[in-house]
Length: 364
View: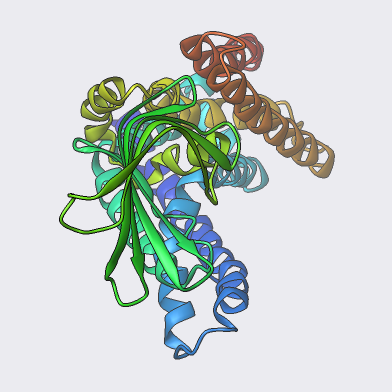
């Protein structure tokens, strides 16, 4: 028992050290690659060199979150290969420790990290990501980030030829129609120019079709003109607004449930949120599966065989599974298959494959 406890600590420390090194390498890669993107974005704006760098560090956390399965995969592959190359695996197995017990330590660490990231880190990363988009929207020429669903309704801001801008408020959205809509038009000095109120607006295209319309030309709301229908030319349509609302990276895991209630009240689809919730819950299991897959491939290596083929095969296989996972999620979001099934199916497939592989390698 003492030997097993000592081994647990040794492999655990070794895996955490490997994770830290790989994590820092990915941090550097994310900073370098994203810095070019931010510099390119701000090249036409009069900003100091520090701004693109700050924006890069605001973007890095959400990038690392999406790349963390790769970090766990690479760390696991390196750990198991190192145990084989240094002949430590032979010594461990000579002491009567099975392959399953060796794999269990990094697997549990990966699972624990997944829980910590989802329940502990996402509240912080969501705030950082929200700050990133808030700052970026101030420099965006098309204001792609100025749309939101709140407890007070649906709010949209859009520029009009650079001289005017509009604030659009609606109670809810149903079948690509905004209900109980108000459009406030301001000049560049924030003076109210006109106001439009309508019972509904069909937003399938950028030429919105408004019904039962009143157009006010004075701020006192006394004088207005009524129209049975009216065409309002916007810079958005239903499809584009969907992209804006579905940016759930700015929402903490703990707030997703309350957001479902708000979306239901506003008539907006909650498929994105349901998908996000289940994807978050599946994240620890997904990290654990990366460890198991790495073990299934690497532990098949003979001590005197060449490693390169197994390494390439394991990495290619896991990358393929990563994209299959995203494809399955997309099918769920578009309601081609149930959301829960789309999220958990790839993970269950990985576990099935890993279970068969683990039974074989544990016999060695």
